[in-house]
Amino acid sequence: MKKKIFIACDTSNTKQIKKIIRETKTNKLNIGYKFGLEFFLSRDGRKFISELKNQEIFLDLKLNDIPNTCSAAIHSLKDLKNISYLTVHINGGYEMLKEIKKNSKKLNKKLKILGVTILTSFSNSSIKKIGHTKSISNLVKKQALIAKLAKLDGIICSGFEAKLLKKICKKMEIITPGIRLKGDNVADQKRVMTPKNAFKNGASAIVIGRSITEGNIKNNIQKLIKSLK
Image 1 (spheres, rainbow, N blue to C red):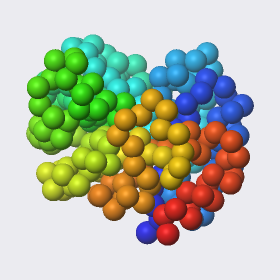
Image 2: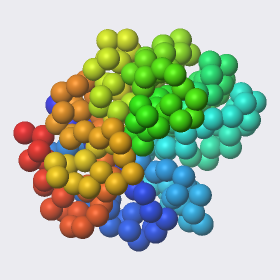
Image 3: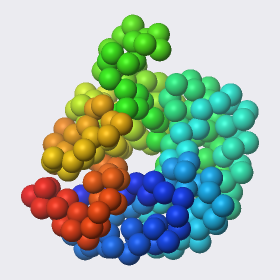
Image 4: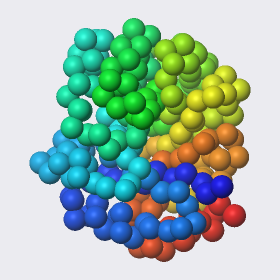
């Protein structure tokens, strides 16, 4: 079975997005594309996404607000019938998650809702600075249980928590960001992992951006394929 890889398209430049899609084509991997706030909020971003055909689209909006506002936000996406995944922050709470899940099925029965746990830019020391007393692994475990109760389709977590959550969320997808090829700059990330180790730890899919999109994209894709062997 081909490994599922989402390429993070973190730019507001549509020409660059087209280049990323064109140069990451391969029959050796199951490739999809993740679009975050930078592209979605750009002048041509939403229109580009709505017109993208024959691609698996991961819309990374990380919704987090009161249930009524999130319900309205889901309704506002009604023109985007081609998206496969949408992210929400589990921190928004059970009621918000339940409302998003309910309204997502009205929008698109095939749309999968993914709950975001602790961002990969956080370490245990940085999470304490904003008032948390529990470790990241304990927080993520608690968040996963809430997401499971709300019947979300999947979890977003770092590779370090994937093995733990695989036992809790047996029927849910586990998608892991914070991925770097061996030797690459980790930049603003704290909890990073190689593609091979993330899959080994239980990820059903990974999200990889800069390791692929910076420099020679075609060469980087080949490095990724080689790293997974």
